[in-house]
Amino acid sequence: MTFAGIIYAICVCILIFTTASWLRKQRACWSYPPGPPGLPIVGNTFQVPLTEQWLKYAEWAKTYGDVMHLSVLGRSIIVLSSASAISGLLDKRSIHYSDRPVIPMAGEMVGFSRYIALERYGGRLKEGRKLITNSLSTRNMPEVQRMQEMKVIHLVSRLMRSPADFRLNLRWFMASVVFQYSHGYEVKTFEDYYVKLAEQVAKDFSRAVQPGKYLVDSLPFLIHVPGWMPGAGFKAAARAMAERLQRLANESYHHVQKQVARGTAPPSFTANLIENNLHPTPDEEDMYKTTTMVFYVAGADTTTSVLEALFLLLTLYPDIQQKAQAEVDRVVGFDRLPNFSDRPRLPYVEGLIKEVYRFNQVFPLALPHCATQDGVYAGYHIPAKSILIANSWAVVHDPTLYPQPFDILPERYLKQEDGLNPDPRSFTFGYGRRVCPGQPLADDSAFIVTATVLATLNICQTIGLDGLPIKPKATFGGGAVCHPGPFECTILPRSIDAERLVIHAASALVG
Image (cartoon, rainbow, N blue to C red):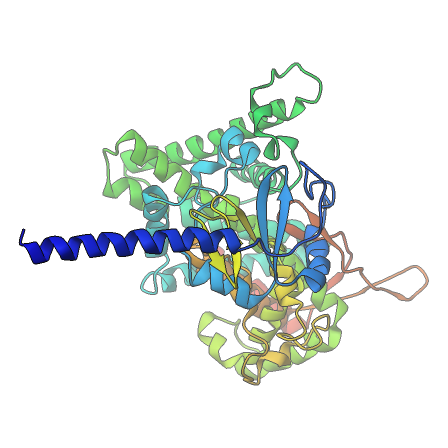
């Protein structure tokens, strides 16, 4: 190296050292985002409610701002309550905020940390997401949509035959769509073995990831306490959940594996994985099992929640239902059922679907992200390993984004206004590099059910014994996945012709 080169290298080293020293000094000056004052050691642990945390976070955000810091037993939690804050960190800086925190109960004890929803950011996650996004590419979606169009005919037929079981019928529809796509498996009844098992696993997931549900998530050392000790009942619960999860992943995968070996496997996502790699390594096979099951565990239950919210909204707002039906009648007519080619010509129906997403945020608090390094945002210190929680509920009820946020207004999306009424799906399916890869399947299911129900059925308030309509209460609950509470509605065919159209279409499928 020449003398000039040595001098240049020394100057570069001095510059790097000086910059690093300056950054350390600056970091010492950066403070955490504001937040409610807590207690010594435990911080805000006892101030965070165990249920409906999004409401408390939204309330606090009015005082402390859209980037808020909480401390729970020494762990930093950053709550993001605005679209700009969420985009600024989880989207624009996704390379540093796409990891998942360790969730001892759901992740390590039950085993969901091996599934895409909770998997740590890395090569295995990227490969699993790539498998899903490729299978739901624009090229493949027409075939998937044809299957959904056939399944929805059976759904409306079931709703006409047994309207009181509408929630069960909606769950059957999503189970049928998902298992047909993922495993080529036809679900005939909701009592199906795989469906019942998958339903329980989906409930396990929603319960296990619910913030504050299990103390072990705040005190990870409890993993090591003996199961016989008082208060250690969570260990038995975790074992039961883990057993169901493993059983579902293994049995459904091996079912398709045997069909492929016999040459009788119907087309499916799982069959395609197996046929393209007949001799996978143990790690590859494990990834195939977990990836194929994510469609139901993370997709079917959430989309069912959207469909339940649709029926609740149609029951509460008959005028909206009538406007949407009028648009469907004008575009589709009365001699056929809606299909996906109609979607671009149904803007009011599209607005209705968007309001359904906004009306019932399936994940009011998005699944948590984790910071992989120290960072600064808006002058605040975001420490490495801090948990970042996007309060999606607060965003879709922000009056500066959605004027009259508690009113249901499908027409709000018909006029384009800068900065107003963005598509709520941007705040429904996750953020940054953790956006749900199954979004096309879920959103298409929501559309085809909405359009077909509007074309064939009337969803009305039930008439009570006093002769007056019973108006449902818009209540929501559950675990991390939010579902509308129990409600009654009356479901009737719109006309004799609509009923005959459905019967004819269902008969043609059977024939």
